[in-house]
Length: 350
Image 1: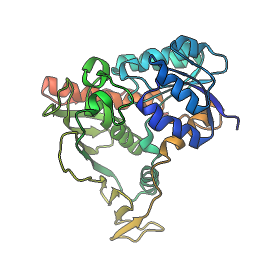
Image 2: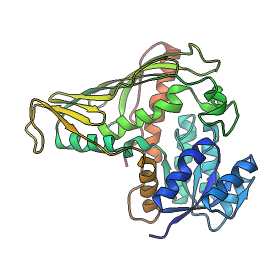
Image 3: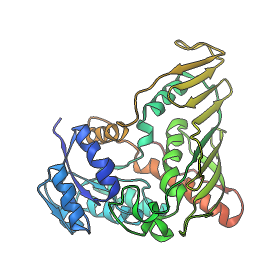
């Protein structure tokens, strides 16, 4: 397959640390242009990616005839403006998560890409991790019976410098600290991955959300601790619990529960089931060693490239990303209104 020629808008930490290495590992995409308001960052990424061009204008990049798709790795509030720009020029669009900071903006981008007939995907890579793929396989086989719930816990401690310099210090900025530019804190920045993962595994929309959150220690406008309870249309009740201010917290693997079994999403993955299923021992724990998750972003990009070439379905579509964003918006609204928030039926699975 001929590599898909891509332009990079936003050349900061995530683009340099994760996306460019994944592009190179995939082999199905080729960087031909790069853009950032900091020309040094754009030039650095262009040179590392083998691109011959960089610019300080997104319009110039999007208009280039040799760019087939645009990867947007900007602060959250710029995802939609840059995506709309790319779509207007007939380019396929791949944005970092979240799709947008508001559902209204997300719907604008989805509609624009549909009008122009271009693909829109959002980089929710957890669904491409080996543990997620194995879990999906086991759920399809029926090990859980009816899904009753889940527990996704992510407790840790981020240095205060993260909020202005990220993990690498490649860019110094305050966009993560402000609600207007980030859309939110831990829930929007990190837990959106977990919310998308559950959405992809359960295959149904959430029906209601109740949340509480706070900012305990970090000098920012957004939350550093959050607890969300969500009920899905299949009846499952799940918990998302996460924080960036928990010293010494140990990693807790994700759990999914059902009427006939339990899956522990760890490595090795562990599954207990009372059902008789080929390859599994009933009424005892079964273990499945898994490969590393390091290739998940490259795998995502490979499927995106195949989708551009008409050889696969797009990964993590805009409609699917909107479902996750609706959960997040409902969670923030839940605390503001001090009540559970019911969600109308919205985005469909593609």
